[in-house]
Each structure stands twice: as C-alpha cells, then as structure tokens.
Length: 154
Image 1 (cartoon, rainbow, N blue to C red):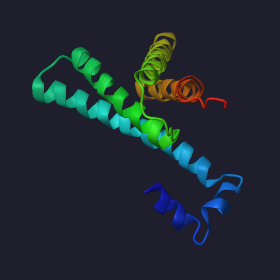
Image 2: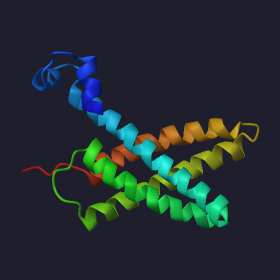
Image 3: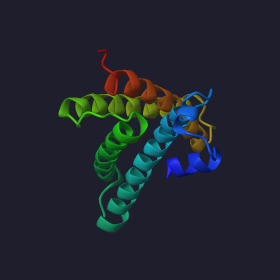
C-alpha cells in the first residue's frame, strides 16, 4: 500500500530517484512504517482489551496485561518487517530486547501520564495521554533503532 502511495505521489519516478531526494522514499517508508506499526499495535491492544472486558468479563487490569502482550508481538513483527526492514530471520534474543525496550517505554508513558495528573490535577486526562505518548514514542524509536534493530557493522 505504501509503494502504491509513493507511486501516486511521485509519478514516473524510479526508486533510485526517490532515494536521492532530501525526504526520500526510504525515509517516508521508514517513518510511515513506524507510525503504521505503532498504530497497528495500538489497535490490537485496544481491541483485545475491550473484547476481554466486555465479551469475556475479565477485569480491566488482567485484560490489559493480555492485550499488551499480544500488541507487543504485533509491534515487534511489524517494526522488524516494515519500519526497520530486517532481512535476518526473527530471533528470540531480538524479541527479548524488544520486550525490554517496549516494557520500559510503557512504564515511562505511565509515569509521565500519572505525574502530569498528580502535579496538575486539573489537566484533562487526554492531554496528559498525548504528552506522555509523544515522549514515549521518541524513547521507543531510539530504543528500537539503536537497541533492538541496530544494523551490525560488517
């Protein structure tokens, strides 16, 4: 789908031409992949969480643990294939690094969110969520790029 969008945005451009542009095809694919992968994981998290609460009757706390685990697997697979285009087959050690980074980022997100609401109690929770998510998104990208999907120097 992204390739088709790029062809529509740059009709007649060859892939080599796109790689030489200041905001290249590779860059658009990379950043678009980061947002699509993260958004997909969010949809999986929210959908499973909601389904387990409303259809199965689990508590919101138990269902969230399950939904985060499922979303983490989806995010790992999508980030490795779409965002960072890793050619090597998936490895358990890579997933373990991903889980550490994702878990740390989720903790950071929750602490920033809670901290904002404690320090400024009149803050609209959605605003706190947006700020916390923006900070966590930056931290997750750096962790994924340099800690999980780093390119090995040959």
